Length: 220
Image 1 (tube, rainbow, N blue to C red):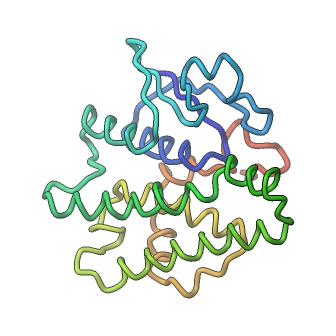
Image 2 (tube, helix red, strand yellow):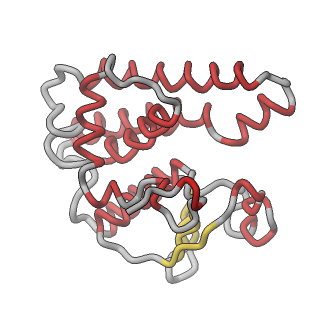
């Protein structure tokens, strides 16, 4: 498999975690979004949407969109499972994941930030307020769904990490980067810390990747 990734891409972060959990090796191809490499013909041929990540299987099939990739990996390599065995549990985990990946995250991606800057001419302070608003709104929604819910355990659903946790850690990482205090959302904070204590999550962190700028990389 070839995994097209960028260190700061939260969607790539999700796939890195899943590959780690499934113990699946992949050849990583780094696509520098800051240098517009995702817009070059070489990557456009892989994914015409010019978005990361992409996963090219050994037979040449290209998978795109992180949640679709995660579900493919779960269906083809079922251990450990990323979704509960019961329909209601799967619906809950998918809903939590979608809250982040399809509602919160899209408002923070580079192409949206570029539009706010180049087309709407928003000042840096206004753009920062935009990012903070949507980050906090998603954190509050997650806390409301997770706190005191009978199915919330050590992780978002039970005591093993799922699709929901894989998505949540990226969003909380963005909050940490914005220096947002997580105290108002204690359940989210607790689950985030439990997940990031696992090596499969920790080694997938954006600041621990080979293409992370040296000045930003976590020192061992």
